[in-house]
Length: 433
Figure 1 (tube, rainbow, N blue to C red):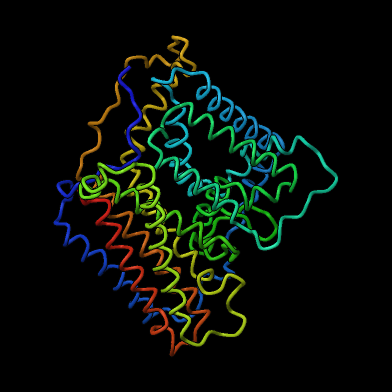
Figure 2: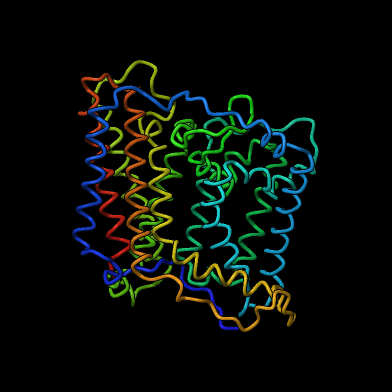
């Protein structure tokens, strides 16, 4: 079968751009800046805070029906079992498990969460397994820990994806997935269902993305149709959430850097794991420093009393990084998901290496011809620009509730500068060769 797991990088190269690189960067930066000044002129009060959506009573009854919950849990358990079974028992040379993990799950969480809202928690097999052990009481989560366990788990996964040379080996995938499942199920048994909302990296990631979905839950737990940016404004400002978003942005930036020919020339003769680990850490550190500096410099203006939560100004503005992170992810993984994602289906015809052809796809190659490079480049640039414009809108709406009107524009200049820098850097990273 002519299928293999490709490196986890999107298609790039300046030759793919329909316009010169410098023009794309200047135009994108200008679009973000113009959006900001237009908002500053015509948007002077919060419009997303406390916005009420349209209740979806029928859909709520369907989704919350016991039969639906059972079906989702069974599907989640079956998929986890299939992933682990293929990873442990399948043919290492023709194995769908790496594609299922890195493409269908990791990349697929993005459209799933944006379209279906907070559905991951309903199908999360780790929640289901931990829930089998019934306890009368659970140990409370440590104070102040919040999202930091999820950040640690996510860092481990991203290191495996972007640094470890054998990350696509099915047995490595099996070890990671099994270890991750055991640790989270054990924590779920000890700390209860609350653990998965803050400690399970994949559920936390899905929940963060779902904040930008038009489907959400209101204060009474009912599904509602809402303005996606209003849902984004409800993101909790808890410790670790800034680290989570900066980790996502920084790791995607490193993904782009590691594809540069300059990087490969400079690091070609050096030890791979230490150099790439330091590169990943440095990329995340730079993104974090830029965001924290912008957020805290924004705080030089006088803030309305009681307007900032426990996470401070970085936490108040961190929700604006969600559409930027999504834009980066789409730009980097769009072509990879559509090309390599086919391997998950083609290899599923014989998931355990038994010589089966369950789906009749044995010997079928991946089709690389259905997407042109111009379309790929257009999606890359469009995703980054749209993500940053939505980030600017979200940040400005939050700022209108933090600062007085006469200080509003001046207070946001540092955050605007960070947004423009992220925009230009993001386009350069996905298009440079």
